[in-house]
Length: 116
Image (cartoon, rainbow, N blue to C red; front, side, top):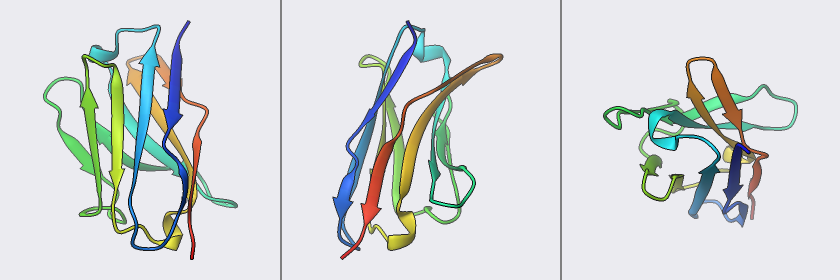
């Protein structure tokens, strides 16, 4: 059974940090490109950060460059999103995604709220 399970969300003050994790099971994680997306209330889901399967190349949305870092541990079948200098506009449900050609898997999401 394919599963992506996110964790690490919560309430944090502006300027604070959180580390999200996404644990994968049921498929060959190493072969998949993985990414984090987010969806704020009333807005469309958007790509936050992505990392390839081959060489670990990364790319980021302009809004999070320099603040967020995506990484993966293939031995643990886990992808991480380190979020620093958080802003209220980072508030959203964060989802992880794993994709390989026609296979496209999503987690259930974890809420991140940035508020004082």
